[in-house]
Every structure is written in structure tokens, then in C-alpha cells.
Image (tube, rainbow, N blue to C red; front, top):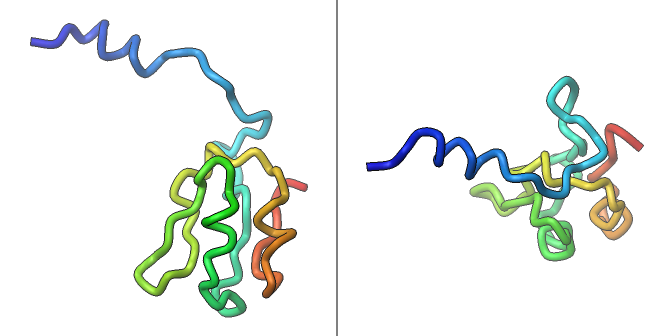
Length: 87
């Protein structure tokens, strides 16, 4: 049997939070899937593992709250398919 207070405490752990609040606006990144050729550089290079491939191998923002706007994904995208909505 699990105490509900214990379960709530596990979710409320203080941790490193992003300085950007994505709860009231668009996702942190805009991905132009027509330009994307599914090279997966963004998925491989993301230090926070924000992306996961969809069924076609193209990136999807699976964990947008973890995005720190580090610029790695859009700087290294050979197709210029990724842009920031916040920078």
C-alpha cells in the first residue's frame, strides 16, 4: 500500500528547472518536417534527450520541458529544419 503523501513528495523533488516556461506558449523548438531528412543528428547531440524519433525517423519533442535552448540541435542541423521559438 502506497501513502498518497509519499507519492506526491516523489514528484515534488526540487531539481534543476529550465529558465524558460513552456507551459503557456508554443513548444521550445519548431521542426520543419518537410525539410528534415531524418539524419538524427539532433537526437544524438541533444544533451537533455529532448527528442525521440517518430515512425519515419524524424525528431519529435518528447520532453520539451527539458529543453534548455542550448542551440546544439539547430546549429548542427544540416537542413536548417530546427529553429527556436524562444531565442
